[in-house]
Length: 215
Image 1 (spheres, helix red, strand yellow):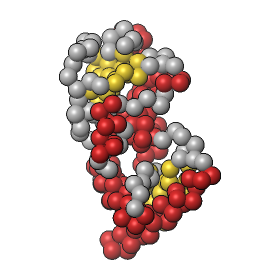
Image 2: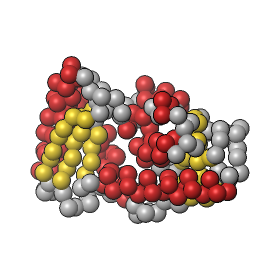
Image 3: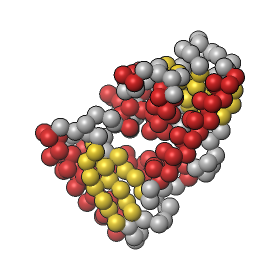
Image 4: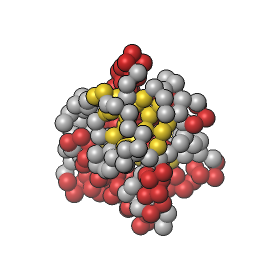
């Protein structure tokens, strides 16, 4: 499935459907809500992030800058060694934004992205683990490769806009195709900003967003 292979379909409301765990509301103050089941996993499993955790809207304090800079340095060293071992070219850029370390590999190759970003997601978890081993602290760093995440953000915002328009016209819920936590958070935020509601349903890796007119 390519970046553009995300589909939507109209569905009947299913308030009691198993696997549904969160309704996102329109007010701006609710934009940081997370899904309960994902949040629970985030506390116990370093590989299970919530939508809010992936998008990370909190501003970093001055006290946070030092540890986050260190996370970026450790991650950059780990990734540089990996690139050398794999004989791949790429420049590594690190910065701190929205309360987390960001690491980008600047490359024209999609080898480290993989189908639907699967390799990128796996590499991000390995990099977080490397930081944990080195610093003793769990990392929430975000890894991007070749601008993949930004391209996906644009596509998902367009997808959300289409679903929002369809819900407004028909009044019926629209179920989107499965997404990872980072992608679901983007859709939840777009729906809330438009004054509609959304929820996530199902289990990973088939967990998806449902957009609706009301909760």
